[in-house]
Image (cartoon, rainbow, N blue to C red):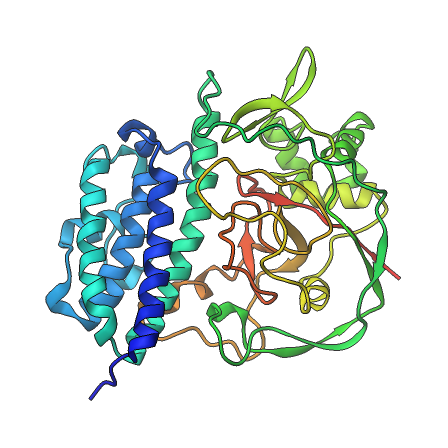
Length: 415
């Protein structure tokens, strides 16, 4: 017989569930049905799809599989809002999610309310196996909160009016950073990866030793002002700085600056969820592809850190530090010396399984393992990452050409 959840644990999980689910609705609160339906590119998804998919996850993997009497969805919802779980059956094509004018945003909010009501009834009765899935679902929804912000920014950037989703925060220029200082990194054998209590995605483990060569890490992120110098000195045009695939990508797409940078008669401007504004040279540069980050590192006489180098530096740092997401509203990096927050940093490490990695059984095993090919690891979180979601072992991953995520750059050097 399954052991019931202890009352104090049930209360803690219920509180976490309400907070996470509430933040998703807060992010979507300013949206019209049209705002929430647009899909600006195949990599992105409409906001209402995110709201429905995260509900489908709880409805399917917690309620349907563990409390079937409380499950809410039918086959239509599963077909529309399954993401990539092929073992769950056929699904709507990802590039065509923006064609889903129906169900409406209000209908999806109603579906969320139904799932939330069922989950609140179920949490105190869930088995240990179901609680593991519940915790995964909460972390999964936090990932989608950042994805919603990424995708909304891409959506609103397509509008020639440069509309703001949220009003800008009171003006507070970013303090000019000091010149980069180089911090000696750990060398020798260091164990990376998650092991022991506490939540982690399966791709974060198992813990294993890595040999670190002597190296140094920059004490802060690269700034927009430093990136301007890279542009002015012909960084995008110099073939000696670029990987072959990167140079081909630059040429094919006419790339001349980070995503959301716009030239004007008065200089560079940048688009954000608070509309368009003058570029702040002191802010961390954001929305870089791996190709751009790698080229800049060469130009600067440095390189990208490995994920093991970054994790060894971050092991004792506060994962809730830096600029991270606390509530719905315009997000932007602010800078500083924190290893967490502001911008995800590209590493020079490919997203591959750790020694001894085994994906989870069943559909949940499709969560990370199937993507361990042709992608690069990012570390540290961003201004759009919900605070409390990060840890030193956390591995994010994207393809080298992608840059609509809040991605930046911290340099490394061999000692």
